[in-house]
Image (cartoon, rainbow, N blue to C red):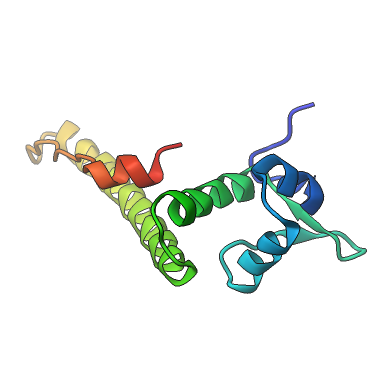
Amino acid sequence: MMHSYDEPVYLISVVATMLDIHPQTLRQYEREGLVEPSRTQGRMRLYSQRDIDRMKLILRLTRQMGVNLAGVDIVLQLKEQIEEMQKEIEQLRDELSKVNRNGSVHVSKALVTKNSYDIVIFED
């Protein structure tokens, strides 16, 4: 059975095993505000696939790139801002293309390129 990307279905013990880290590390990430698992009625933590992918990024930053948790927090905030801006750019492009189809304005598509840091840090 497939679960949605955001559906909280994984217990902390399962996630710790999947990521090969101690459950205490997951609790620390939660205390630091880097990840927010859902809770069952019994207050057990449940993680979604999105949470797991986020933790994989955190581990890549800390283990492979030597970033401390304060730096990870900044990187994650910047990543979210970039994603929001990319959505906004797409919305603006859609609006401009509608205006362009009505014959009012000619707009060339802006080039959006990824730099090498995006690829190294944020690859899936």
